[in-house]
Amino acid sequence: MFKERYQLHWITAVLSVLKTVKEMIIPIILLVFVNGVNDTGKWYLDYLTFLIFGFFMISFFITGIIKWKRYVYWFEDNELRIEYGLFVKKKRYIPFDRIQSLDYTEGILHRPFNLVKVSVETAGGSSSLKAEAELTAITKEAAEVIEREIAEAKRKKSVSPETVNEAETFEEVEEDVVPSVQTIFNMTGKDLFVLATTSGGMGLIFSGFLVFISQFIDILPLDAIYKEVSVFIKSGIFLVAIFSILSLIVVWGISVAMTFLAYYGFTVQVIEKDIVITRGLLEKKRVTVPLNRVQSVRIVENPFRQLFGYATVVIDNAGGGLAGEGAKINLFPLAKKKKVMAPLKELFPELQLEQPTIKLPARSKRFYYRAYSYVAAVIAAVVSYYLFPYGLFAFMVIPIIVLWGIWRHRSAAFELSGNQLTMRFRGISLQTVYVLKKRIQSMEIKQNYFHRKNDVATISAAIKSGALAFNAQVKHMELRDAEKILTWYEPKTFSIEREDQ
Image 1 (cartoon, rainbow, N blue to C red):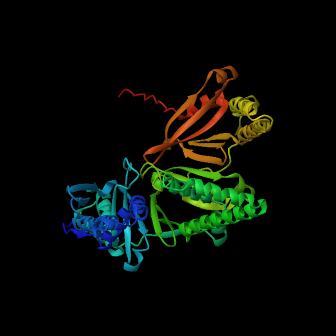
Image 2: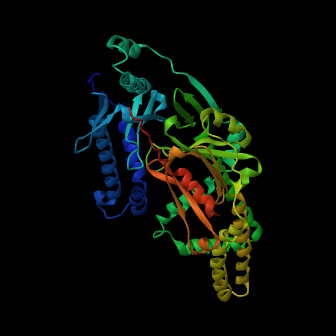
Image 3: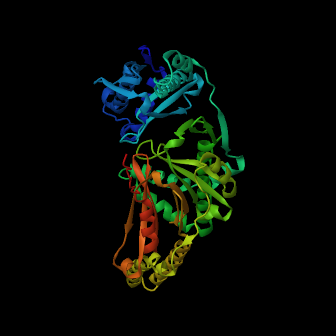
């Protein structure tokens, strides 16, 4: 190992400034465009807001340059060591054997300079949404150096000194081995278009718009806006309908464009013992997941995509932070369900990917809708009382809840196959979870008073997903089946008989 210290690329300072401006965009807009120019007769008071804006921008640039200058990294004693800090110098030492993966991101400002952002993911993850460490902008050659250092340290550690001598170890480490690369999945243009057009991005866009508007709610001329909207509505239902349709088309188009840019060129490869996922057009990302860190495989089918035979395959990763791509990862964002089984079997040969066959008893059906129906009936009665007679339409929700409950009951199933548990359940989307016993963190049975009277129970399996857990559960199943699964999960005890010599 060597102790030469490396600095990030100077574009890091620019990215730091842009990030700060992005976080401060709302206060800046309020400061500049709301206060505007005053007419006091004194130039420094007339342009006070712009002077303050300029002061902040200069401060952002200075702090960005200082952060860049003070951020260095180096390799020492089988560790990646980082030193950084604006006012207080901080040091972080990350042992190579704890590093699970290096995730790469190429943004718009990275590509012209052949740079990448490197996110270091460690075993167990961190307690925040961020990676264990981030190198904001380094060259691809520098990223390859980090990979080589980590790989060399792990190879040295894996060599047993009792079985090989030092010369053989040195030759093995120095040998240039080209890793095998196997492409498992490519998203076709058709699949990408279906994913973009059926994504839930419209809701996110509307939510983001409402959040943005809420920042200006105190300064907006609400009375004038209300009068203009009233006049517009009175101008004709047809015109309002046309405007609404055009607005939905625009939002849908934005949603499609965002999804297309995010998932363009989506590719899944296996490089040695790692799953490597690459995607993105403007911002290219590469996420690495060690195969031995995959805790479960989920096939998710929302009702609309299910009609056309499409499904999403999700894996839960034991690394990463609380959420995001480090924990729950879209392995195949969208593909024909019948076509995903072959690549899944190739990736996870130990899993049996058949559909579960053990259904729930008929007597548990009412548990899926009874409580919801009572709540809906009370709400509908209140609405009907205050909005009679139109409030009576609220009772139409009750049969919808009953049908939804019956649908969920029919969808639920499970299967025990050797050391594997398969669970299928539905909220809105149908989820089929395949998990090995050794990957389950904990398991519990839940029963209430009505469950005990009908000999049913809910079984829940906690699966590590990042720093948290994903709970796969089949509700209101046969009690004896739930106890059978719990007994299957319990550790076996072995008796050892010792022979007399």
